[in-house]
Image 1 (spheres, rainbow, N blue to C red):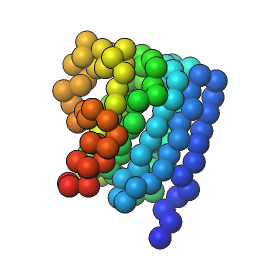
Image 2 (image 1 turned 180 degrees about the horizontal axis):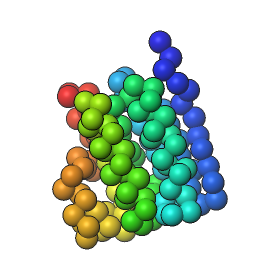
Image 3 (image 1 turned 30 degrees about the vertical axis):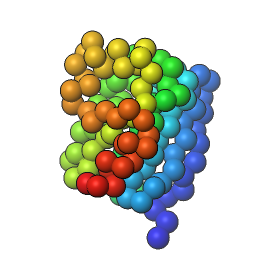
Image 4 (image 1 turned 135 degrees about the vertical axis):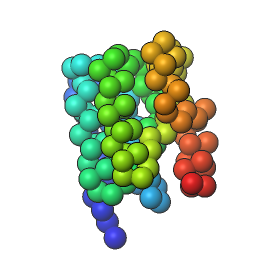
Length: 126
């Protein structure tokens, strides 16, 4: 049963690819996540949740920058995913992005994995 089409969204400095793996949506932002590009990530996260994917894996390996607006997008998705019985798992954060999560304490509310493979293995076990 197809519950939505995976695909790609782009605006300027941010591209977001979405694919489905089992009961999870794998969302891969590439570029800079800030107040100018936040909706490029918000839309696919919300669509995945609307399509019934409450387990979201965000592959951050190509995310080069994240400001507080981007952090708020991820926190909002986390709340919605948890309300639906799932969660948001973050994978492969570059040090510059991980630092934002460390400074704000947001890293404590997410499940963070070293890489996408580890995140997918963890989600598959849940």
